[in-house]
Image 1 (cartoon, rainbow, N blue to C red):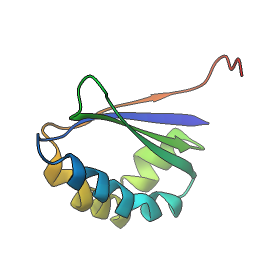
Image 2: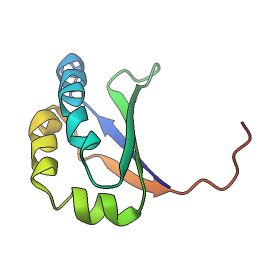
Image 3: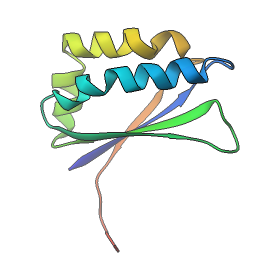
Length: 99
């Protein structure tokens, strides 16, 4: 399993609109090839900073299948206008699981 971590800075005052856009986009992730879940978290110290966690079966499910799909364009239409800067995205693989 691959975990995509996207750190997203939202324009001040656009937080509620961003959160609504992510909620609206959840079905896009649900139907994406290899996607097994999505979670959004908001920073307490920096309330315009969010982290989006998306679980993928393979890296290519995200970088090729999803990013090359019309659903990716719809995702960006739902939330892209609220971004203060391009998201910082990285992919990680779990090494140790304690619980």
